[in-house]
Image (cartoon, rainbow over the protein chains, first blue to last red):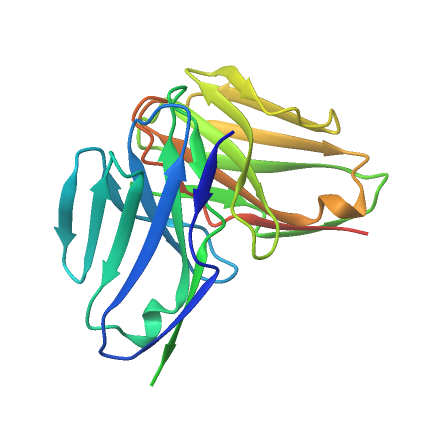
Length: 109
Length: 113
C-alpha cells in the first residue's frame, strides 16, 4: 500500500529552527510537495522536490532523498504566524497526490 | 489572476436540500479537483477533471455530482446529503495532471443538518 508518515505535532520557540520529517512508501514517485495549512483555511504551496538535495526558499528549505524515501521541511527564524499544519504529499506513478496526515506546528513565544 | 475562487464560503443545508458548490480559476489550468477535508485530517481526493473530462472518481457516493461546464469552472452538485458529509470542501487547479502543483481555493464549509 501507499504510506506517508510525518509527526502528528511539534512545538518550537519563536526565532528558533524546526525540522519536520516525512517518510514515504508509494507506488512510484514523481515528486514531493510540502503545503502549509492554517486552521480553517486552504493549503498553500511551499515547495516541490523531484531530485535529491536541498531546495532553499527564504526561511523555508526542503530536502529530498529518493533512495531513503525521506524528506524534511526546515523552517528558520520561526515566527508566530508559522503556527499551522504542514502537509507532505507525494505524486505517485499515476500522478495522483498522496497526502500525509499533516504535522501541527505550535510556536511558543 | 493567480487564485482559485469558491462560493459560497459557508453553507448549511438539510438532508433533503439540493445545493451546488462553485469553483472558478482563470490561470489557464487544465486540471481541476474536488477534495473533502474533515477536521485535523488531510484532504481526501473526490474528483479530478482533466481537459474538462472526468478522469478520476474516487468512489464517491452518487449524492455528490461534479460538473465541469468549461475549462474555468467546476461545480459540485449536492443532493440528499448526510450529516457525516459535513466538512470543508476544497477546489484546486493545476496546469495539468502531470505537474501537480495544485492551487487551492479557500474552501466551502458545509454543514448538513
